[in-house]
Length: 395
Figure 1: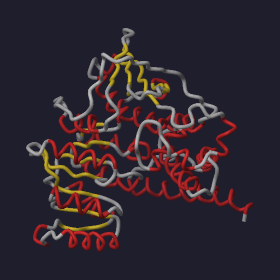
Figure 2: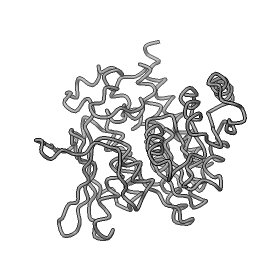
Figure 3: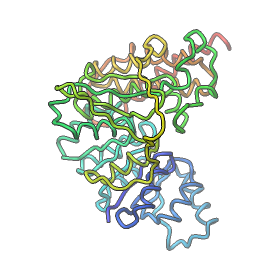
């Protein structure tokens, strides 16, 4: 029985992970569940999966979780250990009983716990972009040093991982990542000034959290995936290409030195890549819809509009700069996206805020998570100042 810690158990990836575990009760069990503020869902998960440890963001959340567990009638003798905060997240990820850590907390909140699990040589199912976008240099060095294994759960990187099994790594010359194009694929650039958060949150393919959905609308999410791919698979920025594929059926392609292109295709269901990571190198039956080849399919591919979606270019700029540039990119984007969702800045100002923050923060090479988080805080502060400057004329 393989024991799992799920970092981000109440989010979409976490919920889908537990759905896979539910189907494979003879193979997987939950040791720890780590959530943020959604204690209602977490309490239900505790009731079903009976973890040894449950972690929330803060003490207020812990008290609310206690109230939820009491309302469910779960005997206190059956409660898990209830903790909160960053140290507790690390505890959940590093417990000796845990063999697999599913890292799916949005933001840098999951970075330290994932890093500490890597240092213990644990297998990591990686669905948290910030781990590699912000800390790729540091994290990959630890992965090599401690012999940990990072298995990507994001559909594109999971697809790339599968494609790369078709040949030797030194035979692969290009990785192609697909993007749906988001809700504004056909929107003229001049009209983006007036789009609303509600319009940006209306993703044509996936149902995700607000930040990642806005990042998909700006193509920043695809830029983050380029950075992740470079770290995960040891590609240079010039060897990773992005193409817009609105149907979202082809998730990744790898071109080999003989001209062959291996493609990974599956239904848009996150349980497939999650299960792939959990059972790798085995392929087990997955509870996902199968492709219907007796139906007519039309798949389109075309280049992204770099001018309309400048954040994609900024991501390439960050991976070429290396070091802490990805950390600054992510931090500034998180602040800018939050400001857009709060109706403080227009949609195009997300990219403008990120670009200006990158220009103001020098690239460094943090040697610890503490140093990396200091860069993150500094970058956020600069981005907030830029947002405030945009608000000032209207006050």
